[in-house]
Image 1 (cartoon, rainbow, N blue to C red):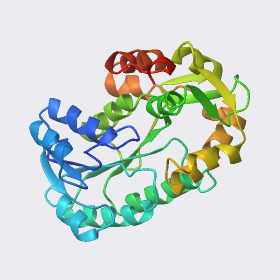
Image 2: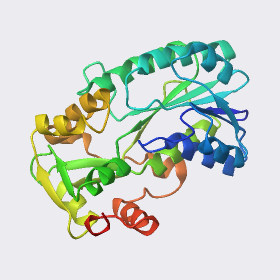
Image 3: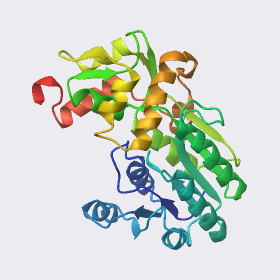
Image 4: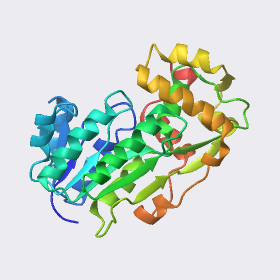
Length: 293
């Protein structure tokens, strides 16, 4: 598919930075990119250095979204885990429809249904319906828990302190890099039927295996859902706390979510990155773990 791609969240945040990674991947292929950022700063200058056109816009401001989407053929929509998803969806859906966008790829949670176990997953379901009804050629990349998030939770304190039950609980995980590669593949594929769905799980590990991979000195501490939510509320927003609290409970009790998919291999032609590879790369880039704090 040709034409300019609008990449939202292109500056990169703290939840995987898929927008930034998608921008990098598309520019490596010489695909024209319009990078949508909230603020013009050094991260925006980095994107310009890649050859991307940078525009300043706010998901929740329709006028700025409408201006950002003018003249593009394709959109990558990645809204952070915070409140406002449905408002942002409505703004983008209307703006994209009015601009004649031919394909919109959104990055959503692995499970999307009216009865999904977390409030964010249920909002994702409604968001997807809005995009599909808008006639924007919507396709959905369904990502599971990022390696980055589990790694950050553990390295912040030297322990994986979570309400996951015993060490045999299995978690479906994926590298944000692989999610971005899948998204870039869907954005540029010759043919993507509207409503297509791409579940992305790169590896399934037990809690015990995760802790062992993190390295010597790390341990697992099982706590209650309430204790985790109380501790997390000082670090992340209330929307994310509500989502993750229910997600950990669902993963603890519903192992059917834990199954590796072949999406990464099919869309990118390469095997999924493993958690061990991710940890080794992170350690090489910046020493982490109990001894480095």
